[in-house]
Amino acid sequence: MTKRRRRVVVIAVVIVLLVAVILTVAYYPRSFAQAVGGSYDPAKTPQENGLQEVHVILSGITVDETRELHIDPDDPAAAELTALLDSQSWRPVYPEVGRQVELDYVVMGVYLVGDPYGGGRPGARFFLDGSGIAQAGQGGDLKDYRMDPALQQEILDLLLEQPYTLVS
Image 1 (tube, rainbow, N blue to C red):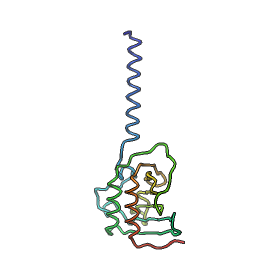
Image 2: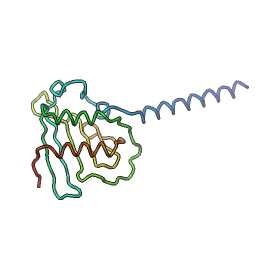
Image 3: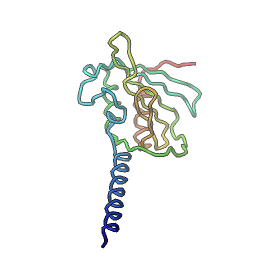
């Protein structure tokens, strides 16, 4: 093999390895903490994370109502919701595929964490509609991830059991 041919083969192998590494990083499963980014740490208690409340909006699809929930960090439902979200391996989806809503409600949740200036700020956001794709992230930076529709239904069932107020 000539030097030129050997160099072409080495360059081709390096390119293939780089593409493999990039694809592995792009599609590698993440934990909920990695999916939302920021300072959220599932190993810490809600108080250590600075969690003030979990604010959830359930927008009715098959029912004509919208529910608003405020779950206190000391409430066992907050720990159960977090455990359900943490039980999932969050695999990125590129590009977003068409969605067929499967749940009775669309779930929009925000973990509000303490702000050094008082009040709360979004620490983690998630969006579920039962389509097999969920969104998670921080602030306005939501990304699509694969999520089992059965787990999404389990999360919705947990949330529907919580006290709520109707939003007009």
